[in-house]
Image (tube, rainbow, N blue to C red; front, side, top):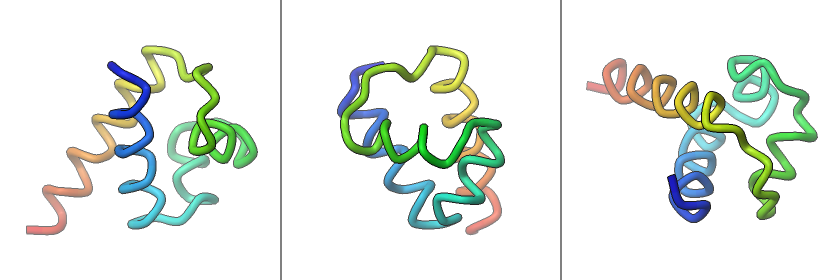
Length: 63
């Protein structure tokens, strides 16, 4: 997944949940989420997939 797409997904999830809750759901420190939002390319594919699953769940609960 391109870094720009990851960042947009992170921004969406952080906007819905807040950084603390997003970090908890992804099982990473809040600082890690902040680093990803500021362009750190260190997000693993497994975390990107977990983020996609989380957003899928959020959009289901939105409707």
